[in-house]
Image 1 (cartoon, helix red, strand yellow):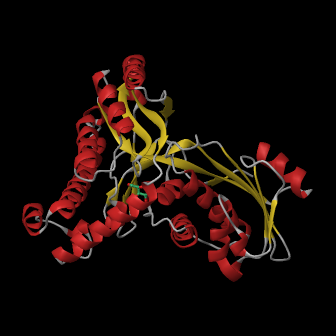
Image 2 (cartoon, helix red, strand yellow; image 1 turned 60 degrees about the vertical axis):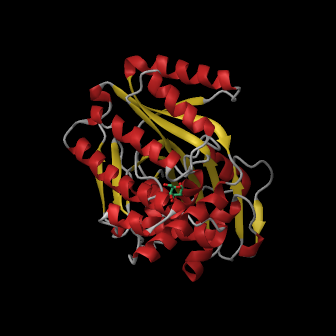
Image 3 (cartoon, protein in one colour; image 1 turned 30 degrees about the vertical axis):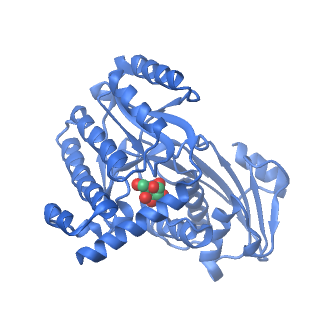
Length: 370
Ligand code: GLA
């Protein structure tokens, strides 16, 4: 394994443990997690592998195969910058329960595709330390630790979806998660026997303002919930009545969150019934809602979704936080070529840089490699 060789080269010994944690795509349930709602992500076949050993002192030595140069040596947590904040954030939260560590990480998640490489890094490191120090954390506790590292140490106010997907997903399945109770169930996602695939369309564009817009959406939802007198938008049962009490942006955000939660439940119902071919309409409706009510899409994502459907996809939507990143399309195997051609030529017509296509097969969540 490449990361073990790099570890040995940098630190002169074998790592005590090696863990892998994947990135994710979200099938449906977007911007619902921080509204205490429902999500349905699945893990992708790419992720972050972490090799780690304990140290007797409190020094952290960190090597990333994606960041050339010598290992970073940190003697205090506030020395962390850039990618190392995701790792040091995890160590910081573990406090006295861990000492220093030698850590090497290797990731193969396509960069900038919005497939949650940061959650994979947090969960990979936290899982390895959990194992190494026998901390007894459950996969959900590992996910919550990763989320807290990102919220408090990195300063990104994300919900729990990405870390939960990375920690809890199972091969061939999607993860139906209630982001309030944190109860979850895996739902078989049997695409192949229906002759279907989920195609990731990576726009290769990430808009700079995404972080600020994300925090703004969160604040708008919290403000709407306060006006409606409910703990979170998840609790809105009378949508029409709620919309009468709100205006403008808060009305649109509420409309999205409430209908998106219903779409997650409807999609889960279809999957349970074995009707995976029928989920396309829900994907399309989710995209329109994210574009028009939640306003987190981008021209590249809209063109990808429209061209995929025109090329024969059964449904498509942006996935993840938005403002760039990736869309997903549900495509019959014999339409893969025409869907890709349709998106590629639509991008060329508009002068967008060419998109990248990746096949998404539901993969296994965090696990130990050695
Ligand atoms: C990002 C966040 C998640 C979630 C999605 C939108 O990926 O990290 O917590 O809010 O956006 O669904």
